[in-house]
Length: 316
Ligand code: CP
Ligand code: NVA
Image (cartoon, rainbow, N blue to C red; front, top):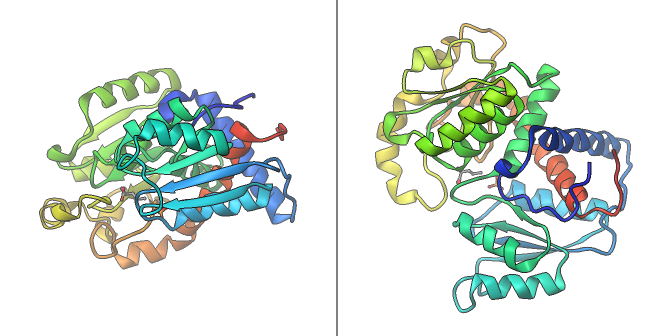
């Protein structure tokens, strides 16, 4: 499959075959790395890593993936460049595009990552915006595939803030690859109706169901995966008290996990986690192996995205 030159801004832009290709490539890169094999597919490439918001996993994943495949990563943090302040995003994009071969962006506006892609003319990878977090979803799907041996037909339940970047992206990713997806959240935190309609359409093509509910007992019934994220995303800290009050009944705890009536349900989290809020220490620790596989898989999947869109050879 030839994905060279493509940007990775939202999973909406990719077919289920393309998403599965990223997963297959990531699995190969992971297996090879465990054997001490890397491929130098990004030799001679320079990659800009733009971070308006903080990051542990995403920054480290891009940096290590670049080093493994022979590229030079350059970190440009919040205070380092003029993006959107003293210089327009379009101008910064044109400058970076003249010097770098690929650009990662983590920030607030989805519109900015789109402008970067349109104006830089090099592949741009979305490392999280307020709206989407698509590289995280590849890591989540890879982790589920490793654990269950397949994706199609799994029952995936996301519990918590149902309209944040993670909920939006999981809804798209799961419905595209045939994973039955439920967003379990209070009505005021449901995803946008237009996004739900779009995902229902993806689900019709892949065979996945899409359910949005605020009913905890019915929502978690039969779940293979219970997934949550922080109740307050980066940039929303002023809403913390209100969110905690609203989401308290949706905490992932032993009682909620029992309601799945499935003793094989796994818990997943994109991290960082606020234990005692969205998940209890007990549920988190009982599933720590899965959660940290998920974190490790950020690196293998981000590497796959860069190798597929910027690499100098086709590995599969
Ligand atoms: N999951 C995730 O994106 O983590 P970071 O914020 O640490 O990059
Ligand atoms: N929804 C979270 C995800 C962090 C990886 C945030 O945007 O802060």
